Picture 1 (cartoon, rainbow, N blue to C red):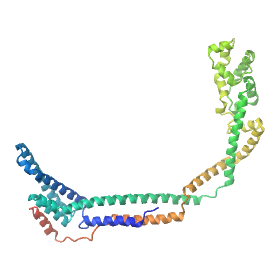
Picture 2 (cartoon, rainbow, N blue to C red):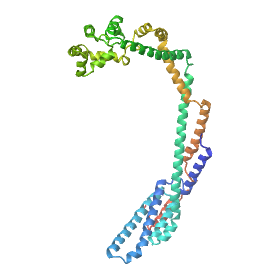
Picture 3 (cartoon, rainbow, N blue to C red):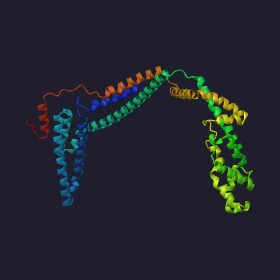
Length: 403
């Protein structure tokens, strides 16, 4: 919800009133004025400290008196430098006549050792500093409000651009989306059938598995390859050694056993190591078939093999084969539907007309803030006879303008 316009008008009014309180005329330099006020407040504080210590120093040691005297001279020089700076700022219209006159009067009183009177006369200067602090706080709040409004404005611009993009989208082809979702569901079912098929293959004796792999050309479906000579040699050894009934997981476990266990299990440890343990990589590949590329859906020929594995596999393969004909188009439409759905979700609760109206309100609120931000305060006081005025200011310092 946007802030009330009255809240912003109140802030801007407060800023204007503080500006009128601080600046005596249009164009007065804020930095120069506040800087001068801060400096003269510091000079008053220094000389109040000097006056407070004066009586104690009269009875102090000689070195302390010298140190105190040097401090007084140093502070007096500060007054001289400030007087020159004040005249320059006034002459260049950075500080107005009323403010320059008040500061000159305060400095004159300090030079006459009337520090208490100077502090009382500087009441207006202290009020200016207090007002300047308030003005800075108001400007900070205005700046924060402007930042929040611009963020809301940018968010609305993004939403409006989303509305435009959404309007440009053609209606979603729900039939294509449904086909894609069905294909994904069948893919999950295919995965289950694949796992059953792999489990059955892994539990076959190695000799039968090697024979089946040759006959059905499983190598082309991602089954771990093994040279024909190695396959024949391994089958012959297993048949003759009495291990012919072992499956791949059983042989893998035995191949990883210690020498002592192998010696206990069999007489020909050397033959086992040569024919079985040396082919441990291939055997473990069979054990880990689930993690391999064997019978993955994207592999050519996988559907045909699964269709021959079981009735369920045949049904899944048939439907996937049919849905595969439009897979690319269905995937693209599903992706577009997801994108459109995402945009629609982002715009939930918003209306194009309502956003447009809010943008107009934000623009109006920004005009309230920004329209006043650069305004000059006051009606403008015409300072005529600048030469005489400058000389009057210089006269307070015991100086005369040259030229």
